[in-house]
Structures are given as structure tokens and as C-alpha cells.
Image 1 (cartoon, rainbow, N blue to C red):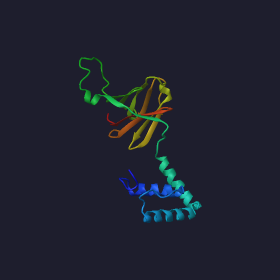
Image 2 (cartoon, rainbow, N blue to C red; image 1 turned 60 degrees about the horizontal axis):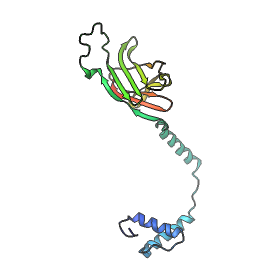
Image 3 (cartoon, rainbow, N blue to C red; image 1 turned 90 degrees about the vertical axis):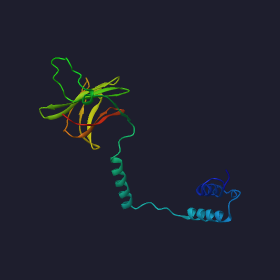
Image 4 (cartoon, rainbow, N blue to C red; image 1 turned 30 degrees about the horizontal axis):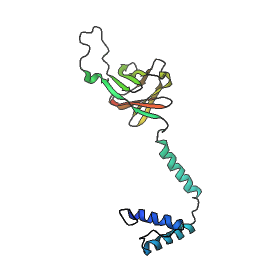
Length: 196
């Protein structure tokens, strides 16, 4: 549409500003008040002197940006949220008739396009432990680190060994996530409640 059709006021001023900056005649239909306003704006804008910020302002801005950036995760990684495909708490009795099945620790299995992870919550000598096995389809599991995250804060991490096994301490009642970090990917498993 034209200058005064369905376009917003800012679009009309932008079109008028572009024409006057380029040295062209105002678009047809532009009011003399609008032309005078934009011409005054251009004169002021061309004569305005923008100074560099002082050292104290620059330092304050840098500190503010660093605090903001510190809370951001790197954006060069692929981030994947794995899907829960098995939870022993909701699976019901599965070991009916099995003899010698003594491990009744809560267990969860997550999957993503590139593999699976098994997470167990067991009582250990040092308290509750989250352990499991990371099973990527193509990558070497030892290229990953497993991190425990509670309330958005990493509270522990451990390298994953060559067969994909890992173990981290946990506390009952925590709502946590596990994050497997590789060279180019982060895979999140959870959140889930830590229970024994």
C-alpha cells in the first residue's frame, strides 16, 4: 500500500526519512508537517556528537555483560532432551517368577536419536548413588562427562568410562537432571526425583 495506507506511522516516517536522506523528493501524500519534522530530525541527527563512554561506565557495562554471559551455556553445542522410555516406579511387577532378582533399585531409561542411558538410584556405602551406563550409538562413551544438576546448578560431575559407566552421589528428595556433555553435544536426562 502507499504511504498513508495500512502502514503504521513508524513505517511512514521510515519511508520519508529514507527519501530525504537519499536527497530525493518526499513521497507523494506526505504532509508538510511530517516533512518538516523528519527534516529537523535529520539536522539534529547529523549534528549530534556521540561521545565514547567514560572508563567507569565502560567498566560497569562490561561487568554487567560478564554477569549476564556467565549464566549462559555455550551455543555451539547441540542440546538434546532425551525421552523417558522406562521408569521402574511405574512399570509394575516385572520380575514375577524370577529367582535371585535382588536389585530393586529405582531405574530409569532415557533415549535420544543417538542412543540410550540407564540411570539407577542405589544405596551405597557413602549414601545414595546415581549410577548408570551411557550407550551412545556412534560416539565413544569415554568422550562424555556426566553432570548432576539441581535447581539449575551443577552440583557434581564425573567422567564416563570406556564402557559408558558413571556414578555420582545424590540426596533423596532432590529434583535433579543428568547432563551428558560431549565435544559437540549436551544431552539432558530428566528432571526426576532422586529416591532410594
